[in-house]
Length: 182
Image (cartoon, rainbow, N blue to C red; front, side, top):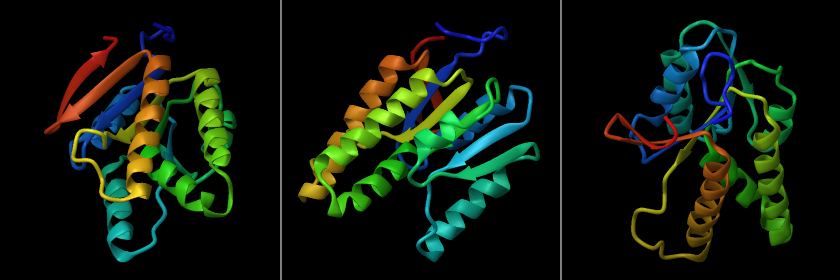
């Protein structure tokens, strides 16, 4: 397991369903490390409900956090962070949604290239890096092609990142279940 001198995994992937406690758990992992901490937000506030969710996340975080928004260029933001600075990305499924919706005027190869760039940026990131994502593959098969593609692309992205990760955690009802690593 690639770790820094503190025993902190270089790359942790935190998965879970909606309201499973994955973001709060990931924040605690980062806050156990020396600040300053970087929160990379992928959400876009398109409506009042999403603005309220973003405000709730911000209010939960203590001082010591810097926030950078990366609804699309997540690989670029990761490549631009200072080595050794604790980084939290929340969340990959929102980033993937943004990429899928932006792909409407491009080929499927565009999404594959963006996903590959993200995986490569995570692979070369010195850490500590904590990635949060929704586990969407445990439910029913979606009834439309876009939703099925989203589910499939999310599953493929999770598999690639889990293979790179030193630690993978699944959160269920606020409880972290370690799937890989310590």
